Amino acid sequence: MAEHKIYKMSFSKVYPLYIKKVERKDRTKEEVDEIIRWLTGYSDEALQAQIEKEVNFEEFFDQAPELNPARREVKGVICGVRVEDIEEPLMQEIRYMDKMIDELAKGKKMEKILR
Figure 1: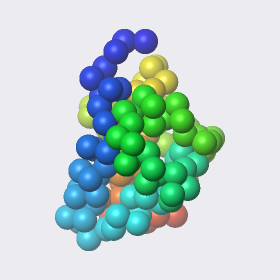
Figure 2: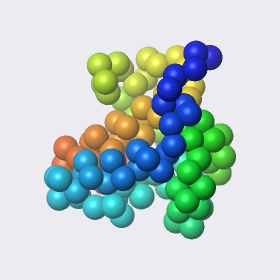
Figure 3: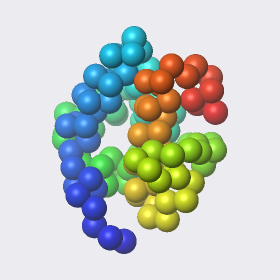
Figure 4: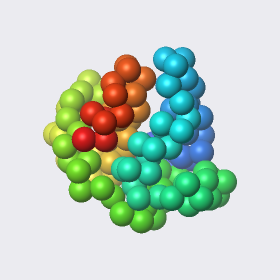
């Protein structure tokens, strides 16, 4: 697996950027958290603990309690690449989350985002 800089980037540094992105579009931190919990299986407390521990993206996904099997239904383009075509497993997990946060920021309903 090629080592991308994002793998070692602290999740806690990117998390507030997700929140800012959606709040500009009148969405909420709670909705971001709901997406992340749905995707990874983290509880509110466990998610907060990961943020406080400043784990990187690789650790964040490695330690995820249960990746939602329905995440494979996330389709579309993020950063110019089709999410479903990404071959590196960790990069695909990161892009699933990016795509879902993007959909939230674009005003999509939570029922549709959470497939």
